Length: 219
Length: 144
Image (cartoon, rainbow over all chains, first blue to last red; front, side):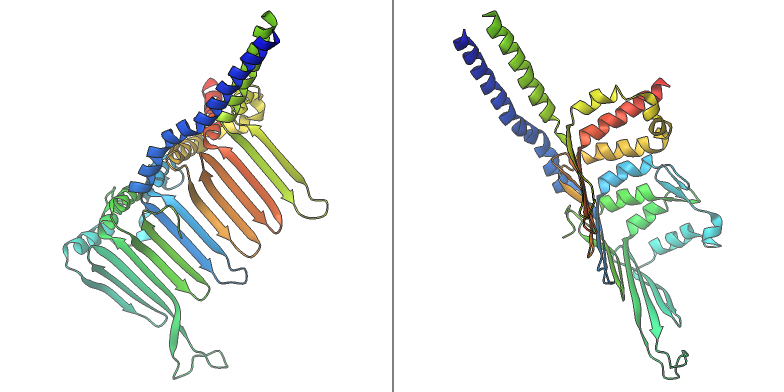
């Protein structure tokens, strides 16, 4: 009888061991295609903030655009509903963004807005299917009394570069009159091929980068 | 011979229960406060036990989650469903002199690792378990 028990336990142990050994393989077989598809066609939005303050903080956020596209319509709070943000007319003043965009869409590449003010320079242009925004914040040298000296020179306080594909801008304004279609913009961004540096901000303490590529890691 | 069959049945059940339990993975929670009198909590729970255990949780203990489920459920389900496609990915990483935070997914588990001024918190939960919990909350909401 003990021989029977021993034989049964042996057979059972072998079966259990085989099941345990084969399970990771079957799990891998299930996940392998999704992994390869995830790395193959997916577009990732990366945000990196490097602060050189006393704690030297670095923040890295990596979001797959497809995941963002799925989650965004599920958020229905305040002004965000079904992937669209309702704009308060007061926020835009008298500016008709849609008319502005239509005008921008049909014009050739070039610089459209150039503002050279005392404390900042702003340039908005269109180039190679992208809308470019370039902002430089200036700092002026001050005298001992805290007032700017006559021969004061300006230095760069912060530098902002924004580069957005025109198709994304168009998609953003493709919704209703008083709304921004963020979901459509995300889809357009997702369909946009190649690696793209979207936003770059650099000031004395912080460097911010927002870019798009097909890698899941920011490094 | 009857004894042998009984033993076979018992061992078989145990073996398959073990295999089933570990197939779903485990939930791990590790908390270490590295200071005098600091607490140290380490435990793991087989993830397969969670859906069954949830049926025994009294309604009043999950009442707040059930009441607020309309707010978070669509978002949570969208995130959990979406995460299936990314079995290995790092979503958030914050590093500073004395603080480190990492939110990642590896082998179908969500990992949250926090090191803050010498205190360590590490949590690992299978994505499927989170979905089971959400489903249980949704079922309770429908039952109301």
